[in-house]
Length: 207
Image (cartoon, rainbow, N blue to C red; front, side):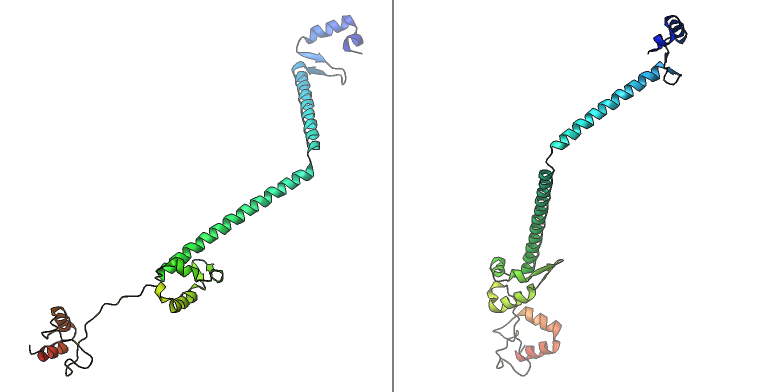
């Protein structure tokens, strides 16, 4: 039974005229509710129904998903990611090792790093920070077995000076004051470093 039937047509008209356009009569609890609030409630109910419908659709889509296949795919992606990470770390480690080895061979004055590297047991050489453990011993061994692979230090030749009292002695010494071995540079050096020997050799040469 609606309000009009409950009140009768005449009384209903009087109530509606008094209420105007701003209110609706609700008899469920005997109170008057503003029309705008009533419309808001209707809109809320409509929105809730739409949300429920949307969630129902989502649930239906989820029911179609193969959970086992999805889990398998996730596992495959994780394994692929781990493999890629491991490959990258291995590559970076190898590059760091190669650079450190190259620097070490250069420091050891190796003529041909490629040839020397071929003689090394790389598996027994470990990179610890910026140091290569086990490399020094192998380099020393190669120096003994294949010395031609390393540069040799060239020491400047210095003339042999004979000691006083042993002119042109058995060692084949050189007197920078003699006519055959006249050398002003060595004379000056002797004058600064060993004046006694300077005077002795000069006297020896009759100067």
